[in-house]
Image (cartoon, rainbow, N blue to C red; front, side, top):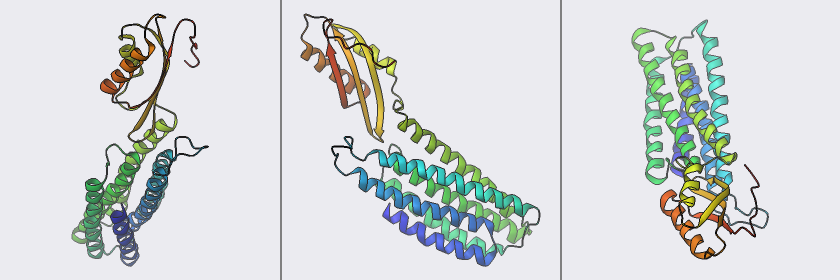
Length: 282
């Protein structure tokens, strides 16, 4: 991520200067996007550092959720930048300014190489599939790469055909792709913050697996949620027959959840008819 941050900052400055010299909205918008990416990557690094800190008396789960908050902020930042680019692109449609297409093409090509390098570094060194914080940073970098591809396409059209309207058109298309990625990040971050169940895990299937254990008569107050990417938790109450060995059934319940649903952070309360807690939350 440090490598990606260094590359992103360098290309941002190059595109900002190149966009100003060539009068290209596509380059300037991509530079603005990369500015948010640099901030996002920096925030992601801070999130990784904070999430590694130990739990405290007041933060009993530690600071893992800061990664989710960082991803949520990054998603909203992408929305804001895409909106500003679309607004400026629409304004330029009325009177497309002349753009130095060849110079824009050179700068965008350098940006594409750098963005692909950043994406490769994140994929090779980080878990961009399962870690939401890294995934949001990776999507930022991919958005930059798409912006560079769009700028290259616009540069070719303006250099060869003189179609200066290609600059705002490409800017809008890239912004729409960025919005799509941002929406997925925001939706999943909100899902985690709302204590939603991890992807691929159904509450009903967990209850069914626990009820299949011999001696388990009821399962209630079953909750499964995500603390942060790769850190899922489960808690529930199970009622068993009074004469059974509660520790033996507890061991079997833990083994069932770990093997079938790959959940390791479990809190299971075993009850009998005399000490049943009752359902607290539906």
